[in-house]
Length: 347
Ligand code: PMP
Figure 1 (cartoon, rainbow, N blue to C red):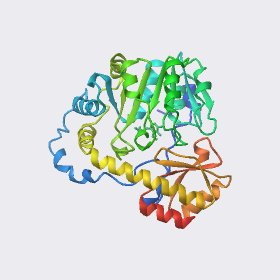
Figure 2 (cartoon, rainbow, N blue to C red; figure 1 turned 60 degrees about the vertical axis):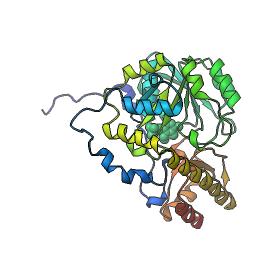
Figure 3 (tube, rainbow, N blue to C red; figure 1 turned 180 degrees about the horizontal axis):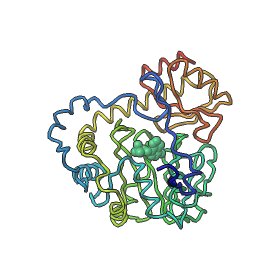
Figure 4 (cartoon, protein in one colour; figure 1 turned 90 degrees about the vertical axis):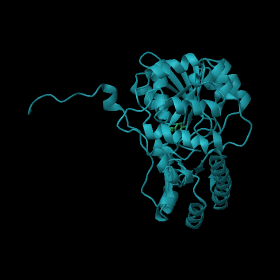
């Protein structure tokens, strides 16, 4: 086939950066680059018998009925108001595809979660990035931007900050964007007052809540995320989703995860406690740390390369701020208690 033409990437693909994931070259306790849980849920080791009758020669339930019902039950909504996806990343992609692609645009904060602009640019939507102020969303400035979708990660990534619940309610009601996506990937790690975004989302077609099993449930490898929305919006996204995007093991284990709510709550408590200890360790080492309501913290330091090297020497991989649009910073996932000791020793 010599001389035959090769496929030519569309111009946006030739120019587009791919998604860059965090480093995995570290000791197990030192893998602190991707905001994962430090350990798998204990119940997973006992789940093999529950998977024995998974008819893996069949396609999984296309409508994800059991898991969707379990999620709806836990959230106090109707299953028709829930869409389950292959991680919340799939749902973010589908939201952009459904409401902003080709002719539209999104508004998002910068620095922010890389996937929002990435999906938008891939799908030919314009991106307006509004700088954070004091490491928080500038919701007033974002509200002025006409767009099809506004993305608000709450807590935010990479800062771990949260927006004021009243300010978020005002934003949801008044933002110039047609719809507001509240990405609550890290919401379980917050300790302050929250806006009832779920009640808002099922009532108001312009508000969509996105959540994941990757963080508090400690199941990032399973790839399960979901959105809660007005049933018309949920039906539109469900129509767009690729058939069978949520695998049979993911559906089965997702249901089991919700049946282990007490273990999840205990894990979240431990992560929140360790977060406070991590902040103390870092601040005692003279480092500036952004107040976080999440399972990671952002360390601000002009010497980020030195910090990264010192951590790497101790078998710890954190996320360089330069990958996240904050060059003078390092993002560190909350480790296990053992990982925290190692980190403290490294500093
Ligand atoms: N939203 C935010 C803000 C995130 O940080 C992440 C994960 N890094 C996700 C969504 C995606 O999570 P998942 O696809 O694993 O559900």
